[in-house]
Length: 280
Image (cartoon, rainbow, N blue to C red):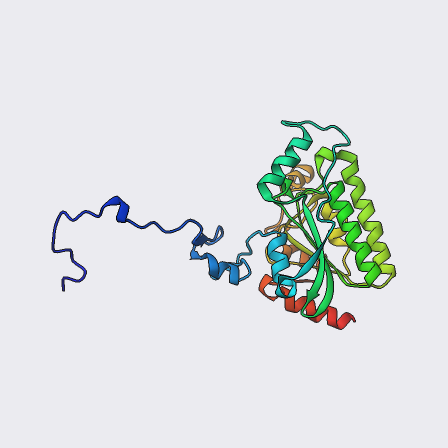
């Protein structure tokens, strides 16, 4: 059986004949560390086939997942942040915005669009964590407000997908004002009896949690998402006690009555369709 035993010694393969696996061909789950093909990972809605870990994705992936044939019309795609406070930390705020736009290909931390989801009209606003930690600034608040206006004008259900580290410090009080602004718009949506579904993904924290993320007619979440206002370390130091196991996980929040249900991303489109069909 010489098939698996090299009979000749000293055989060398020239470097130019060696083949490397292309970059990005395989995906390693950060949770269970197992390997799967990148194409399989994408077809599995960016969830691990072994442990069902939900990878962090942005608006591009959610729009492709939810809108029929990935067809949608984006709302206010060119809206960009100004620099009303002339804020400077390690670099001026406008420079940070420009560099982040070049790095991510995004204009800000949220995109909004309308289209069909299983033949149902829907307006979706989705946050992108890659843009300055998904922080909520004036553009985020304005784009969400305009998306709600479109939802109101056409009486189409509104879905908000949150993933954020909270308010954007570079805009200080102007950022915090977006909490009241978006909440007031959602009140108009409620008065008009147009459904609003809030999907909380990992992580949803700070002023976003304290405003539009928890104001849905239905508040839902992906498995194991981190949901909270202040971080666990801050809370632990404030109350001087150890926190319960799984504190601020979606499952913990559901158990304590702040979520309606948890939905697997692979089932998200069908679950949303069923829910909206019942609400018609």
